[in-house]
Amino acid sequence: MKNRLNIFCNNNIKNFLPYFLSDYELTIMKLDQIKDNIQASQANIIIISKNDIDLRDYGKLNDNCLIISNLKNLNFKNKSNILKSPLSINHLKNRIEHFVQNIKVQFHDLSLYNDKLINLNNDNFCYLTKIELEILTYLIRKKETSKNFIKENILKIKSNIETNSLESHLSRIRKKINTLKSKVRIQTKNEKLLITI
Image (cartoon, rainbow, N blue to C red; front, top):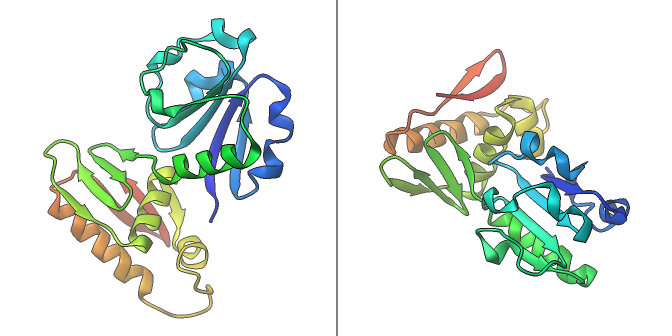
């Protein structure tokens, strides 16, 4: 399963990004689409050049945004999420990979950070296994998916094989969410999985 990566850019750099970011599912948009398309549960790369600075107040963006720019004194609250260009391709690729792996994923009162699941309302937390983390992250990002998709793409089980593995993982995830006293629920409806409150 590829991680999704939103790229916001007005210049021609977007033409070669798919070549060295082939491990990601890319969505490339113009900078003026930021307001409508920034989602807290997705990784966003924003590439700003000198001509773009008047378009938006970038200081209001949150930690799920990595800004690449050659501008000085760029107004952005998380200075560690600013990459100054020019950069080598390898450095850029490594930095993006590190950024995507460490991004916080949120859904209502729950936040995922690395392998830690946190209830933002009461600061209770627990740890998830790698598979639990992948399932819950994917479900938070998509809001709805099929059980077969999770089985085939995350658990790597062919759809024709009978197993209770997915149900076991879901049961453990639900139990951990309940332990945190979260309002979030994972529901099953007609072979579909939904995350709701």
